[in-house]
Image (tube, rainbow, N blue to C red; front, side, top):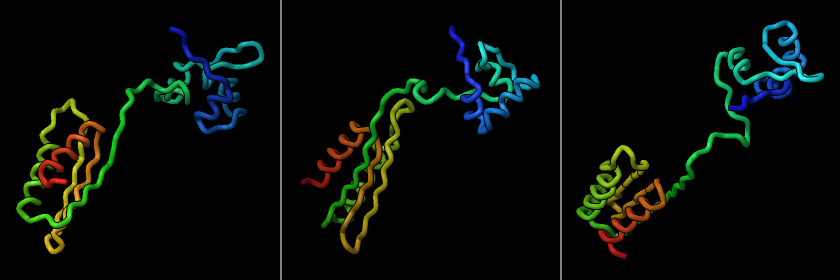
Length: 143
């Protein structure tokens, strides 16, 4: 595996130091480096030994992550009787909490105002889960 070599300027930027300070560390033997031509190069291993912590990958070389999408939706239902509001609250909270450990989290908040007979449901989760939850709500309260 090819080892990453950092320039003095890259190390200085990573550590928040001036490049001259890093060069002095190299010359004093505090930071191990290899001289290539007129420039010093520091291996990732030597930089990690110097700092005592792992070096994050540079911008553009980030760890490959799986793409995911998330949606937020606010549903407001007027003229909702209290018993239907209670059933709706039970439906959305049970659907959100009864999920397996491998599934994406689905966050739900439901608030009912009995004086106005109005309910608000806030959903935050994956596209598919949120769409499914909206279908549940539509099936219970109607269009």
